[in-house]
Length: 504
Image (cartoon, rainbow, N blue to C red; front, top):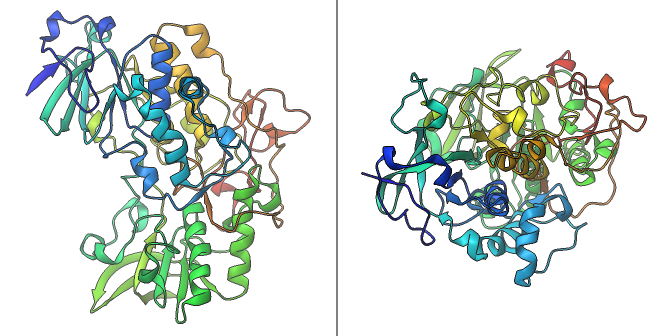
């Protein structure tokens, strides 16, 4: 194993010269970015504009590796909110053609029309290391218990890649690795259901290509979708399309909660992102027409193979119940991988595993109306100086992330790393002023026929962030905004999070 401490020399290669930690000044080192999705590439672009050197580690084979797995899903937010301003400035001199700002891209279009051209910019391409998995981040020469001179020591980032395992020395670390690879289990209380590990062949990814490449797996089959977020809604709507031409297709929608179903369908016309609001309205119709069978109060207690089918055991208010299905779609959300960070001094919210100051602003137990204020380095900071969680991973287990939020996060974080505290503290997120949250549910207007997903969350429930600033007459603070902040955000038609529903 070697320790590398100089600038990257070519895409996919390790650092050049090897040095001992005692010979290295942190200020001369690059900044590590973990993940080459939209937020990770935006971090690299912002570092370059600040005159800093990024080194980007991506465990996939290409940029946007996670997005490619849901390339068939259309985003909620239009292009104008999906492109990082600094990345745009890097792309403009290359002859890149920016997509129409008011259209909603598919995941595949986000990759092909934005991430791939950005990755081809020479300064970005030079920093990219693919098939490189970060297995640990620590301080060089120090474990978590050591304090003296801790902030002056470089970080050590251990990476396993094509050349083996290499320790890289860097001045700061921006973890934008997301949560896609860490889906929540199907069992109760945050645990795997008994037997879950043994039946993986019956279980899909969170957003399978139901209408396209994987259609044969679902047509004419009994399919159970588990979850109450927008990943579930996307899949259920697409399964409805399959059922139209696939005789014998049975669609079961299983949720743990009971009582009122209002919350399951979202905000309709009152959602600040119309494409997202349309989802619930369309799903409500599928349930009313009997295309989708809604099963409430369904808590999975076991999963077992029964010849060629999957037996799903559950507890219900009426006692134990077993349903036989051919395939199960787990739309249960995601959680961050924190194992590689155990030697760092992190301060995480005990509920959602986000940075402690951010946790109360995004906790889905109390927030579902989208009044998350703009935030940056101050909110994202940890006791470990110059380490930051950004993007979807910064939200921990909370399903409320939008790409524009991640871009503002990295603008602020890179300014803080560069020592520009004024720019780091100045918040610049600009989103539509959509008014206060409400609980009325209505139908939505026109939406492209394909299902849509939260930009960046793909599997979360998808509230949007808010713009910090004047309330413009809307009583946002009476809904679920942060204390001492007046915000205007993306309403979703539900107020006060899960705790506001007496039947939850």
